[in-house]
Length: 448
Ligand SMILES: Cc1ncc(COP(=O)(O)O)c(CNc2cccc(C(=O)O)c2)c1O
Image 1 (cartoon, rainbow, N blue to C red):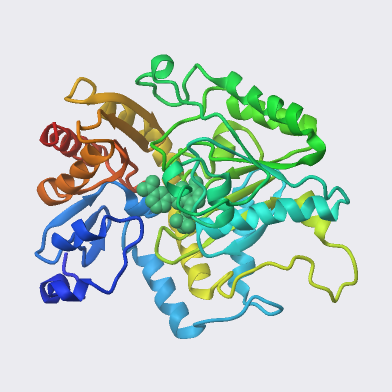
Image 2 (cartoon, rainbow, N blue to C red):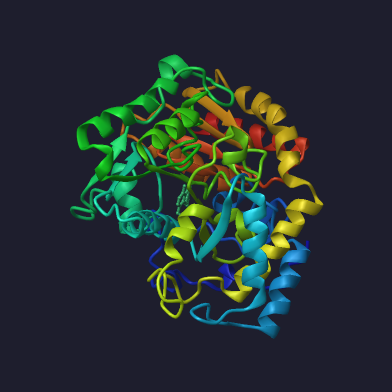
């Protein structure tokens, strides 16, 4: 494994670190002992001192094809030399249309139209705006209320944190969008402990939507947005039947159902999208992350044909939706996306993830009984391991585990508070699943 770039961190003096204000990070602690990677290949990162670190998080749930995959690298290199940038406002380039068609073909039902953004957060805000504008276009503009869910994560836009349900992502930013309600989350440790896949208990929690409808009336409600599997909050799979009940209630009351599939899309659950795994077709679906295997920023919304078609009215020279981004359908991201979908298809990575789900669950659930392990949840190739908080407060044990995993056990790990999350690239082997779980066990013991 010979990186073509020189290790950078050896040349980074402490004061070189000051300028970068890192996102969602403990900046001061990081800059005292940086965790830098200078290269990556397949399942591994490379550090400046030559350590190979196994990627238990697929970067940030995004590198589903693994790192530096040659077809994707070459596609980006070629596009950068051929078409560095093209606008998609009133003009565009062929790969935007080819990628949109391929994404629509991967999505179930008549989810046939793709609006491109550059991140999951932008995809979420796009979906929320499309939902609101759709009811306007249908002459039912009183339907403006948006319904999220407790513990939901929908990125960091004002729309996303308003419908989101994680208090630390909300409390510092003022009043947020008004006209937002939240469904209860679906996790109950006493009734669902150590569940594999979708827990048996909890489908009835979808009926809480009926209470919200009874309070506000359907004539005021535009959409419900949920992650099919709540990821960032610590991997909460939907109770059996829950999503199907949400769909039925939304149909009954003419409420749009939005699936935020930024994490669940592109094989994480053993299918192209969670919508396929659960047999539920949402009206709008957001995606990001795996669409380019993390190699280029991209996100977007896949819309059902009736939603898209409702905008296609009025004089043909007029703009139908006043929304979009400079980098929507960016040529580099489109090239990366097309190559990534080729890799998923040619290597059968979605089906491969489905085949590995049971072995992955067996391995991770083998951690039950270790110090401080309160619960384990697995679904597809994603897992959450809840640790008991340290006496000094929530989050410390999780943080220490992340640091120990990287520095002492050569593993990159994501944590949500005191929950350790595993979401390896879909190219992971059974042997590497064992290695990840062994390292996770050592990490858990190290922070006991
Ligand atoms: C469901 C969902 N929706 C939107 C976003 C926002 O995507 P962007 O970050 O590209 O704007 C996400 C992102 N989810 C996310 C991002 C970074 C870290 C972690 C973690 O759980 O460690 C999760 C997500 O999981």
